[in-house]
Each structure stands twice: as C-alpha cells, then as structure tokens.
Amino acid sequence: MSTTFDKVADIIAETCDIPRDTITPESHAIDDLKIDSLDFLDIAFAIDKAFGIKLPLEQWTQEINDGQATTDQYFVLKNLCARIDELIAAKNAA
Amino acid sequence: MRLEYFQMLDRFVEVKADEKWIRSESKAPTQSPVFEGHFPGYPLMPGVLMIENMAQTCGWLVSAITGFTGLPVLAGVKEAKMRGAIFPDMEFTTEGKIVHEGSGFAIADGKIRSGDTAIAEARLTYRIIPYPSPEFQNTMVTWAKQLDFPLEEFRKVDSQS
Image (cartoon, rainbow over all chains, first blue to last red; front, side, top):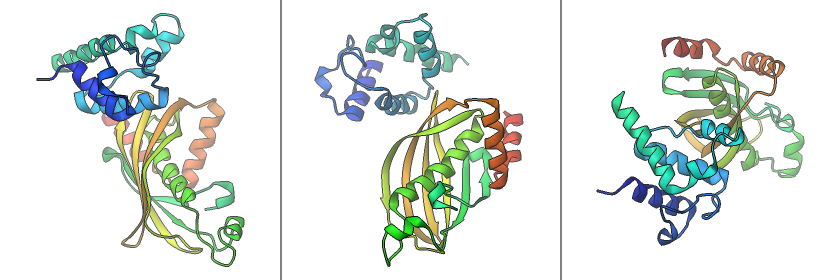
C-alpha cells in the first residue's frame, strides 16, 4: 500500500515532469522543485481527486501572507503530506 | 455576440444547477472587423475566440457558484481541440460543466456544437479572485440578467445546501 508521500510524489512527477527520484519528503515544492502557483493548481486538483479532499489553499495563502505561517509548513512535502493526512482523517470522522 | 468587444455569447438557454452544467447559445455575426483579417474573402471565427466563448460560458457558471462574489480568471487551457469551423451567421451552442471546485480555483469542461456537429472542446482552469468592488458585482449581475443567466436556479441550490 503506497503512502501519502508516494502518491503525492507521483502526482508531482507526472504533473510537472520532474524526475521522481529527485522528489523527497524534505523537498520544498516552491524553493527546491521550482513549482509555480499555476502548476500547483494542477497538483492540487490531482491531490483533491486522489484523496477525496479539498486542500485549503486560500486559507494557507492567507496565513502565509499574514505572517502566521511559513511556506515550509505547507509546501515542504512531508508537511504537505501531514496536512493531507489530517484532512483525510477529518473527512473520515465527519 | 460582438467579437471585437469580446462579448462572446448571446444568451444562456439551459442550466442544471445541481450538476453545475450550463448551455449558452450564440450566432456568429454577419460582419466583424475580426472577419476582415481572418481571412480576407474567407471569414472564419478564430480558434482562440472559440476558446474564449467556452471560457466565458464556463466562467459565468464559476462566478455563479461563488454567489457572484468571485471573478474567474482564465489561468489554463488544456486539451483544446478545434474540430470544425464557425462561419458568419452560424448558430452554435456551448456547454459548460464544472468538473472540480478547488480552494481558490475551478476546473471546467467546455464544448461547442452546431446542431449535432462537435466544433470545439477544451478543459479550462480558472483562478478565482474576489470581485474588486460592490459596483463591479452590480455590473456583473446586471450583465448576467441581460444574458438570461438563470440567477434563480443558483439561489435554489444555495438555499438547499
């Protein structure tokens, strides 16, 4: 059974044509993988579909712009995957 | 429709709000400066304007599901195919369906047909930004009414959800 990280890394590799073996849990989607905001919409679409969730991108962006969060909290892949797992758990608990 | 003003559809004629699906109807103008250049003596609606027609049809739908508070800005066009031509005076319909509502973005499929003939299709990505002012919202709602946009259908969905 593949992990959340495996699925997300596969999505990023396929969506952005990034070699899969360069994507690690420590990779920062923006700073390391150079994924821009438009490409991230495609990734968000694929993640939403794959996991049956809705990544709260607007909320995250607002928190970062307001200085309440750093991009690392949402865009380092191990952190992104932790957020995804939280959203899945919240959906299953509802 | 007035190509040179980017008024790219005539009216909305059918909606299934619960399915987030809509259909518009248009008739290509008899004359337009666009046709003078594309092409002299053989006027054809440019493919990019077919995409704009689909983008506007789906865009109104995206704006409606935000309660006319969000402006859908076209951010991506994928799998665009122009299967046929649109000539002056030709009537055609455009279907739009939202396939995903994300956080701050939406993805929709557009299809143009003339009768039973498929003319064009594309998958469209929109960023959704807030309307810049209450006045702008009033302008858009007034414009929607002029296009026979079924505002009430979306209010019904809002009240049910």
